[in-house]
Length: 210
Length: 210
DNA sequence: GTCTATAACGCGATAGAC
DNA sequence: GTCTATCGCGTTATAGAC
Image (cartoon, rainbow over all chains, first blue to last red; front, side):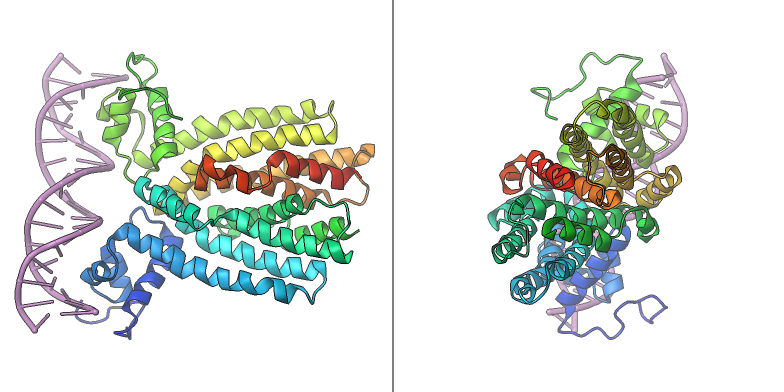
């Protein structure tokens, strides 16, 4: 690895951003190719660092994958979710739902490859489940957020009084998950086979506000 | 599913059911522990056959996983799905949707560990995508089936005339998939955190027929 | 903190007897 | 068709210089 051939992703590697470069590279590579044959050698090469540096910053390979999930994908989405209730107050129900569902489906699309990686390894799976349960994370967080929003809109009369908000939220979040999973599973090619998220959410907004 | 007390799963191995025993064992082991550290040695030991027998019946490890998916999980569900339209005709909308969604979420729960396995390996992923696209399989098949059912019920007047059936079907199927995924991801422990499929589907039936 | 070099190990897959 | 035995390879992780 003396001179640069053609393929290095991080040519001018910042000596201070090694940890971040490793996380970012791993995230991209798992999304593109999965974990199964992803080696620490390759990550190192692609990130422009040495293999030993990975083991300096992360205890082992499983710990690296967990860091990618929590620091690389989950944390950014939580920032979005925390700001949602305030932003949503000033919009119509349809607009608010469209904003949230767009973000949620992208989140799913980003995190699903990593969750597939987690699910395919015993140890990774159980340590991940433990941590997630401890932090009370999971799909139900999205459902609760939208359920709370719908409950508030029910009080203002913008949502019909007889709607069960948790169940409605479940339907909405399920659609986001489905869109994200289809993309994860089949690639962008299969996009036309499912109704668009936009149309689906609009229909749901109509059912709820009519 | 957990089965035998101690170690060997197939003590009295039938000399004629070797292929089936390998598929069944692999399915169970991937569900329990994922593919990552699942070795052909272990499969052979657990199924009560020799490692070489695996390579007699299947070209390689990826081919084995594909066989598990198509022969072990997908085919049985297709039998159910083909019979659905006829059975559904004699029921109320809510009853029909409850029957189908229960089956769909169980199917999804069963196939998810295998899809995680596929998604974590590059080669497996691309060959699987190719085959699935060729057969036009995917989550959209469930959506189409329910969409078709709702369209028929719209004609009879049991479903409101102004409902967009494809979008409604998308919402219903999304909830099934999400329930299945939550169980796959977090284990049975987290069941209480999401609204039940039953309640969700009933609410949707109410929105559609009201 | 980052590197080069290497050790120890377990894996998928095959050969060849029966 | 099934077995036992084995090989070559790629992997994770570490040692030790700088």
